[in-house]
Length: 113
Length: 114
Image 1 (cartoon, each protein chain N blue to C red):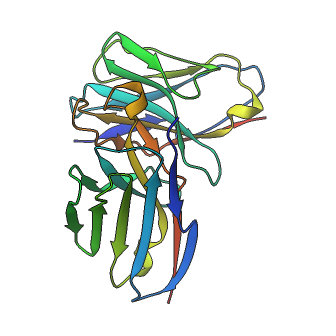
Image 2 (spheres, rainbow over the protein chains, first blue to last red):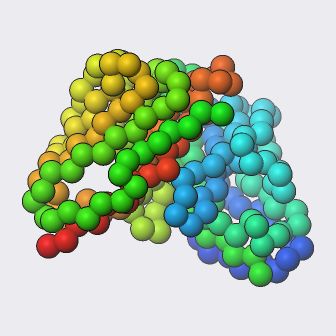
């Protein structure tokens, strides 16, 4: 199993540009999550999904959108990039329910200039 | 929302020393998870705790679920250079009524000197 994979690993955007961060998992997990981690800080939840076709907002959803058309994929969309979105983005997945153990991807480092 | 406070924020220790860190919550948790994050990588799950009072080991790591259910402790014995990283505690956000969302602590940064 590859686990949780994320692409790209690095990206630089100009203010106002759009992009999609890709996330895929091959563990047949129902639940998937997107976090951002600012320098020296912990992880903040952006969006999560409990299954295909179901998504919900986390702690910091503004400026982002998600979709979950398949169990495996959970892309994160930035429509109008802003400098405040400069961060490292992590995707994670879990079985959900009583099993809270989340498994993380390697991250995407995004810089908005 | 819930807050998870970790202490210490950072620590320098010598190789071979034992390490202790803890995590406290403002409310009761049913699950405690401990993660380690290496520089430039995603967090990796080290230990999961599901029962108050539970003591679980993973190699040189031992974690305990506090009896009050508001705290958890992680110990690393005989530290080695590859223990360097940031250690996060995490638990499910009970305020939302779902066990699937995690709140993460602020992290303990560990640095090991030879």
